[in-house]
Length: 448
Image 1: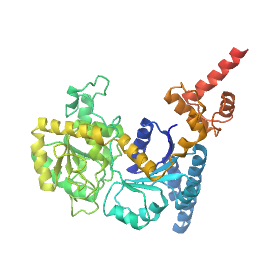
Image 2: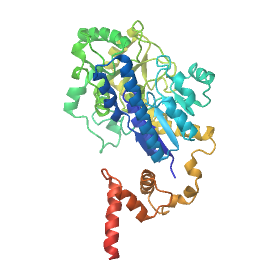
Image 3: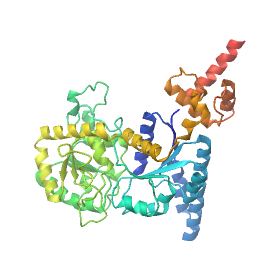
Image 4: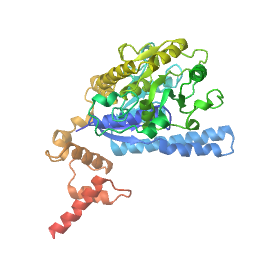
């Protein structure tokens, strides 16, 4: 039987798409996955802000609502019976809920995909998780050990190949040597909409605002097409003409088109210190892996952890704003060199840096540190094949087992019990449920 993983998403933010990529990767790895969709509750939380009440009253209402969200999460845990609750950074899970899960023997893990120096809430929550994965090394790992976190794991970010992919006729031309008959085409309309000599996709952090003012001057001086996509770019008159779609949030599919259409993708890591436009930090952001997986070319600022993830010829880097402006001109005039670097970067991601690989690493770490995990593999019903016929296709076996858990049926349920439980609940039917009900009707007709 596959591991049962409940993924808890945040209300919003950068770790939300990462969480969805983890869901896809876990399913690709054969896990039985359920998702706690925290974004569905976010509207309710935001609605309290429209009330004209005192701040202390507002705090009380918001905390009460978050407590209700926690109860909803516990109800989903009770129904799904997961082997692991995997939380993404900023997931709405309280200390009370974490203590309850630990008391009930449900393993918990967080993937903290944020800068520990900037987001410090980890100090209050990390000791309550059984496993804590991070995107930085020292001194973060030592600080975690100092507060009692025994099972901390360095787990860098990644890309999802089925999402972050080359498009035919892209700016890199990478797919000319690949079997891409069924791949999506980056058409002329997309080229006009998303293409640029150099572009950036992301939020307007202070260091980026400072750096891009200079790049805007470079673009004007050399008649280059410079485009900016993403949110939080308000009150920047020097960048206004370069900002696309008035700074709205860009979805994953259009992000992939932007990466493919640009000749050069700028990848400047965020910093809240505007005086240091190139911060030379440690962790590597998701954009690094995603652009590379698209077979697109990028200029990324040097990071302490970057050399152990990519070889020198697999990415083009810069260490200062002067070097960035110099390399923009250099690589714009050398498309063959851009394509070679982009191809090698994509090969590295597919080899070592996919979310499927990250999830295998995380689950392997848990098995190593927690003997007997996952408990579902040790159950008597599992040893008997879960009660399902041995010749069932794996995807059907997984679907039936997930439905059994949702219906809160015991192992090895008979067909009539599953149908009775299925008919007793409301809601939209999926394809498997429709098929089972159809088989039941056919069975009744046949028996007559």
